[in-house]
Length: 167
Image 1 (tube, one colour):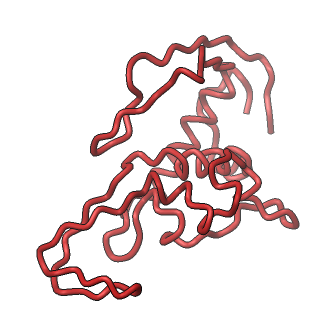
Image 2 (cartoon, rainbow, N blue to C red; image 1 turned 90 degrees about the horizontal axis):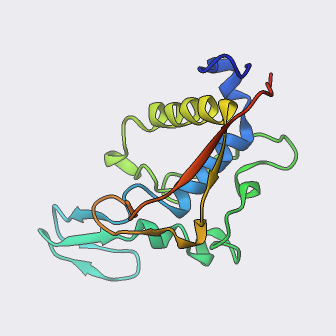
């Protein structure tokens, strides 16, 4: 893919293992939906013995789940691409949807998760192949909590054209 071309091919995108790892790691730490409300359709006994009555709302803290050391290891709070890449094969490791919950899991899992992942890779590859993106004052960025995880206030960035290409 050259800098003149703005849309990578599917074959090119599928070779971008580090890009996919970066997207997955970003979604783990910053899920688009930080809390997922669920309603119990019937009385349920959870594995830890907690009783949930039919009609009760239970909120899954997806934002917190992506940072839990007992799920992701002692470095759970760190942005670490290596957790997604098999050190031997250099391919993306398969992680259960019940662990990586960015698109939910089970019968209510997002039907478009594969398409969304592909679109994220295509857009990111197209942008990053054409521009260097420098976020100004990244330490000042904060997030609002609502149904989605919006950036609070402005997030200023500078773009500079790139001239390099990749295969």
